[in-house]
Length: 209
Picture 1: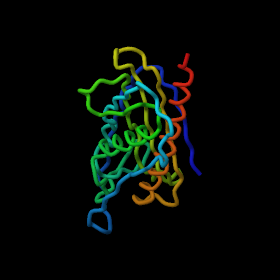
Picture 2 (picture 1 turned 135 degrees about the horizontal axis):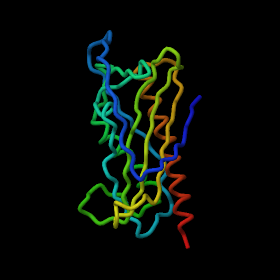
Picture 3 (picture 1 turned 180 degrees about the horizontal axis):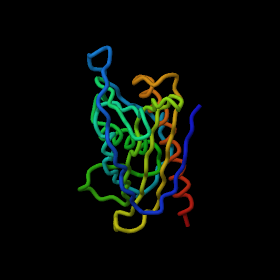
């Protein structure tokens, strides 16, 4: 069973959560294990928006999930790195690439760019505020992913967001192990991006004269 939550944010841009990591845990196998979160929207949209170029800022991760090592939550205020289980690439680059590829296929934008020197009509700021496997004794095993999205006008980044949303998804897994957690993140990210796409589609539909 999975759970997905929507959160309402009152401020235009919220600060990333802060926290601390526990000590790295030992694994029976000391050889490195590398993981990727690779999802695909599937089919490409048949129609694309006209004259709606999106500049996608690099996806940010809150500090205690920014490293390559997989993280488990083992207490209410305690997190522990699961060395030697790591992402194959920098997680911020990985999430940016996945989001860019998804939005390019959605048809919601005429073009999605990551070059800040190019002209764009809108800017999307995104943050990953939770990325961990839940290993607390009082909770069932879960892969937890939480993201925030802020769509801004490129003409005035200090203005209120045109669109904003925050989503949290908790995927139930059989056991909190790194492979299970990564698989849960993959499934959760696909559903989370699909939800954001639907929300953006609804926003653009309302904006039509």
